[in-house]
Image (cartoon, rainbow, N blue to C red; front, top):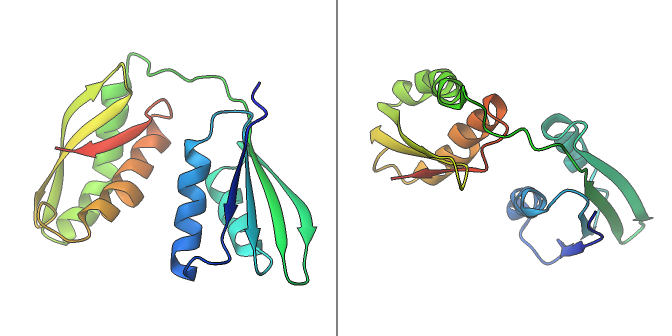
Length: 161
């Protein structure tokens, strides 16, 4: 079990970058490691996001509560590795079927290219309007990857090819 703690001070960061950065740092942690955030206000809205996204996968503990500084430890719990399983391709295809209507509504689509079992990375091709869209990376991470990881928890990431 790791005792590593990653420090992240949000106070000097633009507000719109804070939550995405916290989630990025948390997802990079191994089980048993802690993300300690320091903020200039109570991060209660972030707590609610963590409850929704990582229920039963993290512990949230206030270390300091204001008035000018809030410090919170967010510990990633040790989880049994779900592995990929024999039906991973089927699960990934199901996930893509869930996001496909949203992409098609904007003139795009997504195609499964490959699943690298060793790195646990899914490779997809964004097609149509999604292929050249300036928001393609956001769509890939916030929409496609998030949905694939919901269906196939053993997947560690998604890349566009």
